[in-house]
Length: 463
Image 1: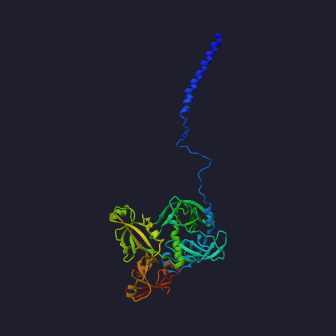
Image 2: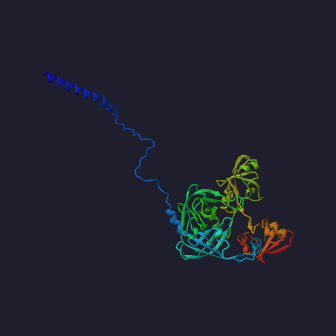
Image 3: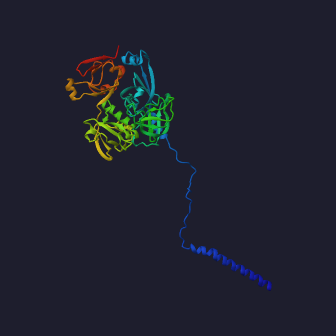
């Protein structure tokens, strides 16, 4: 009996102890969360949910390539100059013969009826131009017009079928770091596509050569034969015409340059509509600022275009701009260097208005300026201008081009200087700038000049 009571006592003691422990550690926890409120889920800050094992989405160039590869053509330029009797060439190069030469490049079809944009230097001095499309069809092309200053030329081929072509994009909206494709025919390899990014904009390769350069710089591989080809964005829109590379070896080393599509399109439309390029003139002369120029002109600004003088009666003068003003932006395009200003204006036409923000004595002002038609052209190492009514009255002539700047050493040594007037070229009267802009040196046989004294003199460039 005693044994039974002892065993029962131990069992009851164990039962009570178990109930006590359960009540203390489990029942109390259940009571604290009796409100049924949702429990917060703690996630480490460096934790991300992964639903599939895949890397970042890759940039897809296939659509852009498919849209553009069939609209880029191979351009073959046959130049046959023969033995040159030009006095000008004899003076500089001697009595060498110039045999037939063949150059190659690329072109971009920009309309279904056969208009093609390429570089001026691709078709320069041509006697015959041959176009090969991506489907290996060959056409003879004619030069509709060409602009050496922008290095853009327009060709035309005739065909009954509608050709694939590339739409123009807006090069002003492109951004540094944006993916681009270069499409062309390097080393006579048709339909080559390379990829890269935009490395810089408004690039001027030589700030002292007087050329209007406003290139888009990329690291897409471009080599000999790519000139005149397409630079397109990932949507397949034309944003540039590939034009140049910088290289010691002559091959691609990482940088290539393209004429912005807004400039190329404007030149193309001008040539189609007017026969030559309509350039808008702001009417300012000056210098792009940097730390050295800022110190020279005693200004605090180190970026912008410093105005040293204005052409009387043109837009900037009439709008109230003055010497010592600093142009900071044009139509919200920041002007940090000369290429920013000249490049943007190259995409505008005479008669258009631009909004200019300028700094005068430390204060910023804004003014609207009307662009005027450029009244000068470079011809045979001379700057020439159309005659003013006063000049026509003074010399009693109705046609001619006034020489405002003489840089041709050969003509200068024969007495021709600033102030002379060109009356005739090859016995044909000249009156408009477009008549001499694209005239080739090899085609000039003689020039009739009018001296400031009123005497006439004809100089022959042929023996």
